View 1 (cartoon, rainbow, N blue to C red):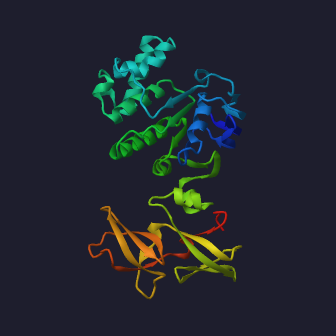
View 2: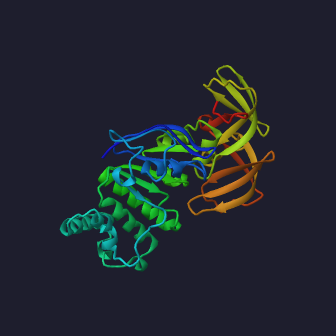
View 3: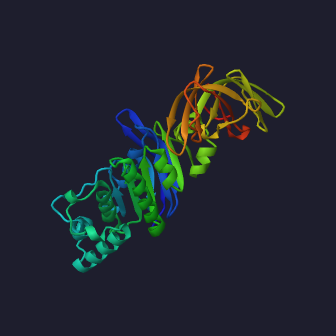
Length: 355
């Protein structure tokens, strides 16, 4: 196994710079997720690590070796794609072992490696079937098996679950997490789905417009977003961001949202006047009218079984609260809500940066 170092990595397409000088160290055995909206550069970055895209500038190391000019086959990586890319005329066993056959490994060793990978992925009973006889989740496990048998230094996953339905995605997330726990191979995983990134990765790297805007453990980027973009992108449902005014002083601030003041103490707030207040839906709780920070009218209810999303209006701004199921909740009802001061995020209205 090996770590990966990106030093000032750049990718240009003509006059357009898609990746803008990224520095990143991925530790040996670490699981890192690249996450961000479409067009942020995450797949381009992964393809440069794989050798499928030429690096325009900077240096890339896998282990102790600079690999900028190495062919993909010489980088000792294995990649799992969004589409399974299985040979339809071959059996599952033949698909998994095909790369080993091309490398000239003896048949007995190929069979042993295929059997080992199949056991890890719990697909031993499928080895004689053709891809057309498999479900989407089973096909993706075959594609993962093809990567495992190579015993690479690095696994690269490029949105491998996006073609699966919701239930299969959850099942496959568990399989991938179990696989990493077992093999401990350095892994980079690209996804636009922040739930996948948060549940799978040791570290999340959030990209926007070809740059890293924040990285850290999933709980860190959720709890302490450095920008409005990160606050809204990480977390489901997304963070409420409300226009407010701020009066600083006395080691804290008073933030006025929808005509109601919230006191935020223990912070040095360098901004006065217009400010943005971020509150996650799950941090809003129902309370008595005496405790309430917000009195809002329910506009729309979205019951999800385990909880209910109440979309409300606060002084012309939409506010979503994640609440426990309650048959008494109805559109048009008044809700009294509060939030703990430590769960209030403040962003500069001009720059979007956390203050």
